[in-house]
Amino acid sequence: MLVDNLEKINQEIQLACQKVARSDSDVTMIAVTKSVEKHIAEELAELGIENMAENRVDKLLEKKMALKNFSSIKWHLIGNLQRRKVKSIINEIDYFHALDSLKLAEEIQKRAEKQISCFVEVNITGEESKHGFKSDEVIEFIHQLATFDRIKVVGLMTMAPLDASDQVLHEVFSKLKKLQLAINNHHLSYAPCTELSMGMSNDFPIAIEEGATFVRIGTAIFRGA
Ligand SMILES: *Cc1c(COP(=O)(O)O)cnc(C)c1O
Image (cartoon, rainbow, N blue to C red; front, top):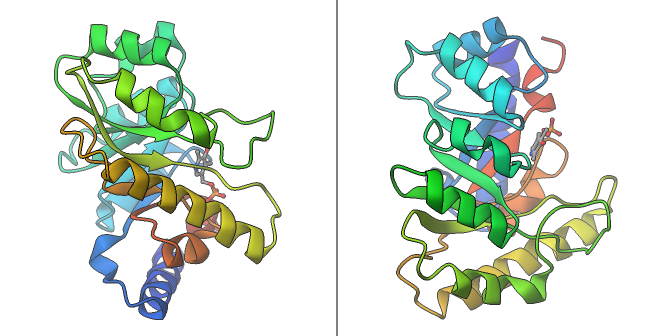
């Protein structure tokens, strides 16, 4: 079951890449395991999945412990992170996808023992319910990170509105891409910003067409499994 779902997702990734003449080697699928038990995550690891994500600190630590024999797995924290939890998680992960405030950046700077690859979270549509910077705040925020030697801004992350039309999805994702290009123009050594973390089970082909380099996929992997 998992194998079939993964195969189907891979094909969709390839198709989306072909459509816009991108190489599928530029797109990394992250398996979001928040909805499944440890043993299912372990099955994924056995199938060769090398990027795993959780949106909660305690769950990520649990899964990482359970999968400690799979030492090549990269761990992604994709959910909102409270400052008081930074200390327990920040040195356990390879990527953090939800940097959404200067206060959080300060705490990461204080607790990290190495440089942490971070995505700045952007709230493209400005929905009240969402975390992340508004588009017009992002560049100023990134400039404020200049002295934070423990934070590397590897890219931007966004979540599209639920149930948006394809047209709106294209708009949201292409806005994140434009913002990335604007940041690239600043040539900041601590903010290469080469990556775009966007696209989930329902919208990843569109995100890839618009330039996603990391897609975060949960439901589509576990459907019927
Ligand atoms: C749960 C989650 C995903 C995966 O969503 P699916 O619709 O299950 O693919 C991606 N990103 C974030 C931040 C999530 O919390």
